[in-house]
Length: 306
Image 1: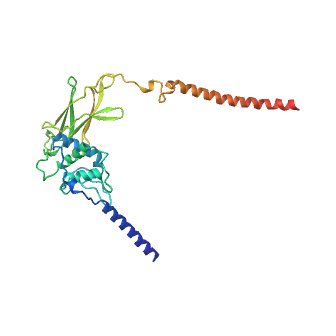
Image 2 (image 1 turned 30 degrees about the horizontal axis):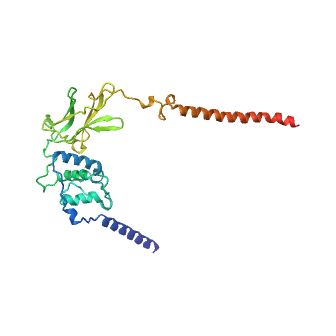
Image 3 (image 1 turned 180 degrees about the vertical axis):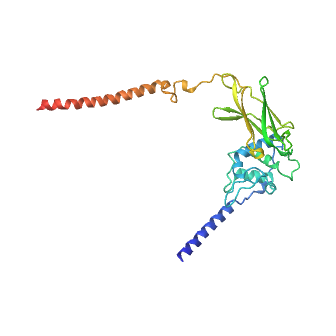
């Protein structure tokens, strides 16, 4: 009987908690917020910007838009933000929910700027089949291919990088892949700097043409490490290529370990640290020798008193 009561009590607590969580996920959007309109046009540049912001802040929970690969949270799983069921909402509703958050959905009121939030909404609207004015990111249907490759053509004089994306069809023909976003990055000290710009989608030739920044430093000979990859692995898996190119400004890098600093090697430690250390060691050993010297005098003092 006692076990039955415990089981019933546990089930009641689980039911109460689940109900509370589900209610916390219910949205109440004011009528004034629903009427809010997106002030930005659905241009390719804005959609591309929104996609990058989405991948950084939203993809970890909501997955890829339209693919339904959301994080399987319980009891309420995140929505597929590219589905028509979600996009039936107004721009104002989506903006309000992104801004305020609710339950497991965090608030982005202070995390993202207003422009960034609207860019994300612009990106999501590109999947809305009911909005004829929206521009789709991938309007071009590429043939089914394998052996997808990225070829780089680097013009050192103009400092331009041309990346070509192609794949092999079932007939053995290598064809250009259009409408695929590429990320062109330069390795820096603590990561990669993205220089691909806002419109890094392959054209009908499968190419993306990017101007290398004029003021970006390289090593002593101007060498930089380039990494070019397909931004979204959902298309063809992980496809990338790296290259060392002489596109940067020749720079004589200063090794911070060569100067006297607290993070330097022993030979380059600050003078005051060296003096403090040596002085401390001498003082400690001086006290030790003084104590030993006094101990050595004890037998003589004992004989004198006798």
